[in-house]
Amino acid sequence: QKEVEQDPGPLSVPEGAIVSLNCTYSNSAFQYFMWYRQYSRKGPELLMYTYSSGNKEDGRFTAQVDKSSKYISLFIRDSQPSDSATYLCAMMSGNKLVFGAGTILRVKS
Amino acid sequence: GAGVSQSPSNKVTEKGKDVELRCDPISGHTALYWYRQSLGQGLEFLIYFQGNSAPDKSGLPSDRFSAERTGGSVSTLTIQRTQQEDSAVYLCASSLKAAQGQFFGPGTRLTVL
Image (cartoon, rainbow over all chains, first blue to last red; front, side):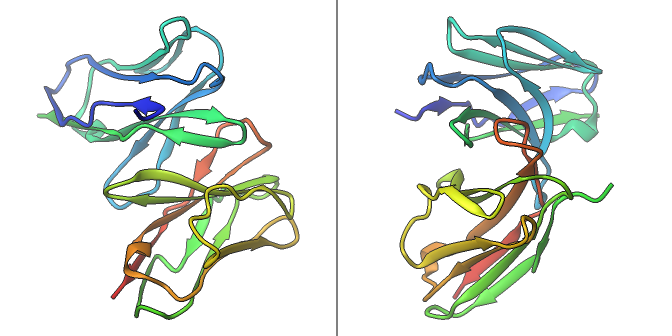
């Protein structure tokens, strides 16, 4: 079993929809949680960075962490075709990041 | 401001050759990381630098892989006697200090023929 599980998708939604992306993890030692967006043939781009359980909002993006359930989510409101990318969750273990497999998101105009 | 840069962007080499990949982190970032991204394995940690020291090399897959960092800035990842299974995108990231958000470069796409 992988330390971080993430549905690879693809997830296809119409423009304007609310998108929910999720990861589960097994290692209770994970303390920092991040979401990255990666466009094809580009490096991952840091979207959100959280530490504690609860919600963190930044523009159209909301990151949610539930440490008791070992579950994290990223919500994207008013999704746009430009949001089409692979979304990777990542968790910090010591000084390194452990990544999920990434979810491919396609937003159709 | 300038982000993390990597060179070359693409590298094609023959099996058995050595390759060097370079990373220029964001100015002032003391922590530097190398990761590898391949289709079957996803994104995998290779090595972490704090300053010029590498306290965590646990992700290096074999002794053919080595890395160094000089002046607390530029880092070079060297792969000796490349094998076809080394083909992947090699990503470098930096952060202001450890346990903070890591910022990635565009990667070097390595193809071993």
